[in-house]
Image (cartoon, rainbow, N blue to C red; front, top):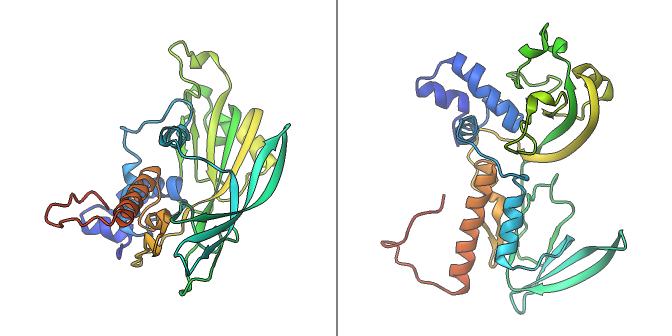
Length: 305
């Protein structure tokens, strides 16, 4: 994490052209950044360009949903406002606003609950923490850095192949990657098929679903140039990944006794798989601490990152 992706790959014998034309395309599409980010996250980005990738039918969101179901945990839809340390018991009080749907209306209720262990599974930088306050702790928590904004635009429509310089519609590519930041979009790709079926006939469907990653929300005028026909447009605007630099950074899974932070791992690299590794590390830390397990280091299985 002390070396940029560019310098790290050049030291391994890769040419500037390979980095500029291949590696940078993955960095721009995946992280909206360039080869100046640290080498480890650059390697994770390149790994995502391989052909052995997969997706879950119905959306990758089903992975955490099914894990939640199998865990039999109770999910409260709420926004946390404050985590307070109870000095007399060592536990915590969490103040939150609960949300629930009643007769198609969203109702809110202020709630206060006591917990022995708190695990934060969300970014905590000033631009992402949404006002979560940590009170009555003997230390001041600092979460430097910022997250990188990505706007995902999903368009159900017909791409304008002439905008890309193609005379014939059949010549249009299924994906377009860029190597330069500051353009109108970072990447564009056809989502094919959207709903998998052995009977799917994509050629018979003139309208496709396209996913566009950009730094800002695309304007209607630009979308009307990019597509000759638009049926539906959806925007997803979020702080997606940390803004990376080639500087050593060792964020901690343990913020305080019995207070843990899964997203510390994102500063090494941000990906669904990295979140799983972070969650497993925290789960092991919590289990071992709670049951006060004495592990023989000579026999310990080193599965953590």
